[in-house]
Length: 242
Image 1 (cartoon, rainbow, N blue to C red):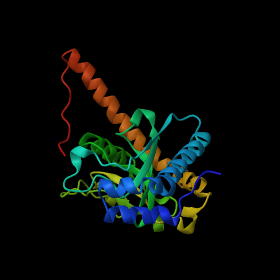
Image 2 (cartoon, rainbow, N blue to C red):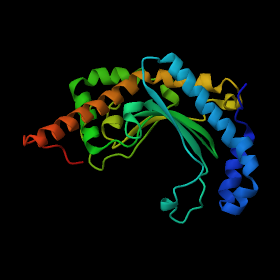
Image 3 (cartoon, helix red, strand yellow):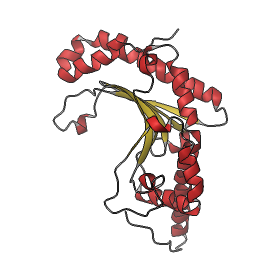
Image 4 (cartoon, rainbow, N blue to C red):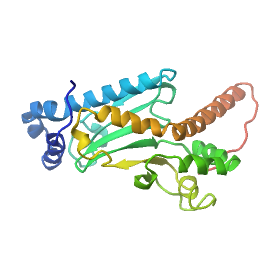
């Protein structure tokens, strides 16, 4: 049976936030490995295994965050993060496209479907897809599992891009979009069943993930076509400035 998260995992993140310095961390390195690092990696790997098993036709990749902050981006903060996360996404969209994600932090956990690094052009393609079939997108949103408990993350545009009603507008008028849940699993967060529960929740988001992924790949295809046209001196079209 793989290691599981425990209350000690959360407690360590609190202690780290209060003692975010190298001497303290080095003195508690063994506690970090046993209470947090090992069980978190086990959760990520087992969830990924289940996702690969359930979606054998997809080329999925797993990325697990490190506890160490990028030394170039400390901005006066300590050298360690007080949260850990992992993501699962298509290999061709690694680090840039939509992803399933899980985060453990001092307040508990959150998980869902994210499209954070969406460029201005990707956002324009996303809205164009909604423009073509707004009713289809409404059905997609309304089919999200546990929608009444979910929340939508992402910076909103200062000037709305359009209005289609209360269901679509929160999605249409955001620079990025991430939908998910906070502290969804209760005490199951500390159970061996968590990888299966988490994978099942991710799979419930698969239709929306497909919409996000199609927007991402459409944008990438357009960009590649323009790059190829530029080699032949063929002018490209103008694109919306975000």
